[in-house]
Amino acid sequence: MKYVIKILFISYVCLTSPLLAQEISKSDIIIGEVSGRMDYNNITSILETTYQPVQFTKRYNTFKLHKSSPREVVFNNSNVRKSPRKIVFRFFESELEMLAALITNEIDFTYSESIKIAEEVQKANPSIRIIFQPKPLNYVKMIAYNNKNPLFSSREVRQALTIAINKHYILRQILDSRANLTSSPVDKQSRLYENVFREFKFNPQSAIKQLQNAGWYDSNQDGILENRNKPFRFVLYYEKGVLPDEDIARMIKLHWLRIGIDVSIQPLSKREIKDVKQRGEYDAILMNQYFGQNIEYFEDIFSESGKNNYMNYSNKTVNYFFQLSRKADNNTREQLFRGIINTITLDQPATFLFFIWIDWYFIHSDKLQNFQEENGILKPFDQWQLKK
Image 1: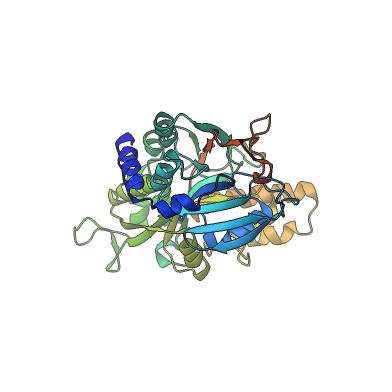
Image 2 (image 1 turned 30 degrees about the vertical axis):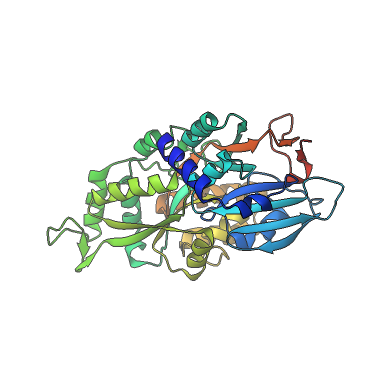
């Protein structure tokens, strides 16, 4: 990792234009983002509610959109008496490229899930303040399947895909053991979690047997399973340039190949992922998903009529429970909710992988101050101050 960052550091210094450096004002806050992590065309709506990881409040209305492009989104501060003068979101192709810009003082703030990157940035530029913040509860990294695709229409097949992945190995090798393993859309720390929820443990032999029960065999001995002469082959998308997603996607590809499934992995920008989800034109996506701890949030995603049911998931029991919950009292709704989660866990419309604990935040403390509450939580950007 340190050699990669060092090479990118040199490349970025060589490629950064003098004009770009001149455009950066000391009275602006430059935020680094990855095109795979955030849709540049959707920042305004995000600012109106919340920006992960910095919370915005209703009074946060002095920043008006000035210009927007795939490379940069600029907001002007209409309150000239306060700093910062502008908030600039600058987009990069990868986290490594973005962090090279951080090291060379081209951006003031960004974040990452990677502890390895945090360690290397600290070595490269000690003036960068590195702090960690807990991720929201039920913020899960998962593989979403398009359940309308015949490859994923069988519960048995989806379960086989899940138990063919060695989550423990990924947790140790890529995530530095800084995440909770899961087979469910809710964390064990959640009030909604119950011990009866099934745990899908790594078992490639059982995965092969389940696939055979579903009609998948390597009939022509080419190493890839077939069903009615159709090979088990599909594309797994992941968020472009986002670490550790690229490493996780590669590892999952290897795990699935070992049981006879041929997967191509392909990075997409956040906007491209949003488009393929809306059109239903995808096979599987490695992504982060937040699940709110209320039944309405789950209904929006997992109900057959849900507006955000991008996985095209349908289960008669789940739909019926959602229907009953609308007129039920609070205790009954809670029991129905747990029944819904239990059924979703059994169905595996997505392979639920990890609840990652924290994000690492990088802040140029030589330039900025008043960016943190006493409890360590970051303040909204409009409260940040520029050092004189």
